Structures are given as structure tokens and as C-alpha cells.
Length: 70
Image 1 (cartoon, rainbow, N blue to C red):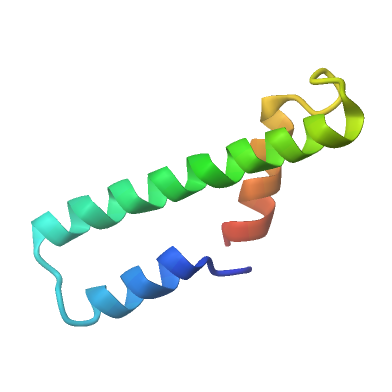
Image 2 (spheres, one colour):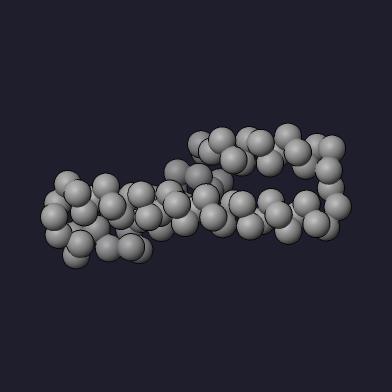
């Protein structure tokens, strides 16, 4: 499993900051980054194929889950 830069920083922060507010911020940051990765994948596939039906959004979510989820 790969770890994004945001995940690495958040992991280091949670070693010293564990309150509920930090957990909320961390969850939001991870979701924002996930959406950015998925969107980038979609844009990259569209740039290559010029056909949005070849690589639908579900494929990009599969890519994210296979690459960044354990």
C-alpha cells in the first residue's frame, strides 16, 4: 500500500494530537485528497483516450482503493 504525503503528515500529527477536533480535521483532509486523486485519474484518462466512457469514475475509485487502501 502506498501512503500519500497528506497521510504521512497526518500520521505524524496524530502521534501527538489525538483529540476529537484533530480527528475531524484529519478525516476531512483525507477525503479532500482522495477526491483530488480520483479527479486527477479521470482527467488523465480522458486526456489519453478522449473518451470519458472508457474510464468511468468508478474505475478511478477502484484505482484509488487498490493503490491507497490496505
